[in-house]
Image (cartoon, rainbow, N blue to C red):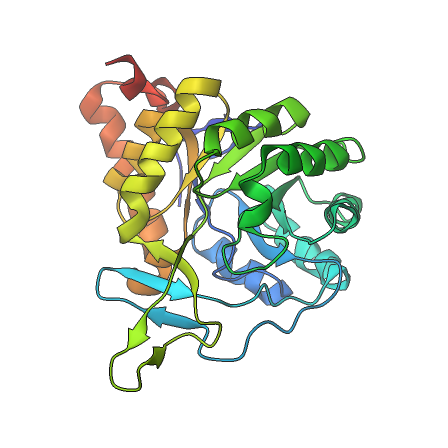
Amino acid sequence: MSFGRSLKVSVAGITLIHPVMNASGILGYLPEHADIMASWGVSSIVSKTFTREARKGYDPPIVIKLKCWSSLNAVGLSNPGVEGIENFVKSAKKYRLPVIVSVGGVKLSDFVDVAVVAEKVGSDAVELNLSCPHFEGGGIEIGRDPAAVFNVVREVASVVKIPVTAKLGLSDRLVDSSARALEAGAKALTLINTVRGMSIDVYSLKPLLSNIYGGLSGRSIHPVAVWAVYTVYRETSADIIGVGGVFTWEDAAELIAVGARAVQVGTAIIYRGPRVIQGIVRGLRSWLKKVGKVSIEELVGVAQKR
């Protein structure tokens, strides 16, 4: 599939052939996962979150579909640990697309150690997962604390040369955490992560997820993501990757209009299949023509000026 120059965009100093990436979490820690994601037509391959030690994750059920084109998941960041990063990155690099490794941890040193390995094996950037709503100790607890965000980003940015992005979730201190991440050396922000939620089986009267609660994703959080990107961009003018309920090109266009330079797609792939990526890209190209713009970058944050 050929992509026009008009859709090229730069995020954190990385050039993308178009603004549509995959969100971390759908696939992305085995080499064959990289092959699958590249076939979707994404502009950058984003891994699932790697931690220093291998994690088994939670017992099933770990993902449930909801009626509102959304899902709840509590996977528990299952991954093979740092030993799995090299094979994944090598497989992804075959496609000559930027490769971004998602990094998680509980202790500050966890984030540093994983990021160092990611850089060593050829990752083009790291995305610090500072906001997983079902990962105790290393999830949203970090992201809602601006001082903790600053410390993690600063330490990682001080030991790697590749761009560091910070993935933050919804919190009452989102703007403060975003500003502190940028101050500490983050080159971009990924906004937002899933939102904590739960669902009950009204017959067994028990939670549907084995972990009781999990992360809500999909259409139901899209307006929240639009608000978050709008608010943070207005205050910081940062490079932002918008994520949350992107099912159509209009959803992607909303996020771009309020300040996102790129978007990530996750739950839509589960519901609509991988072709949704190329459909969004085609729609964005048509959008450019309809609004009379030459480059997608002309539309970044345009809604802020109205």
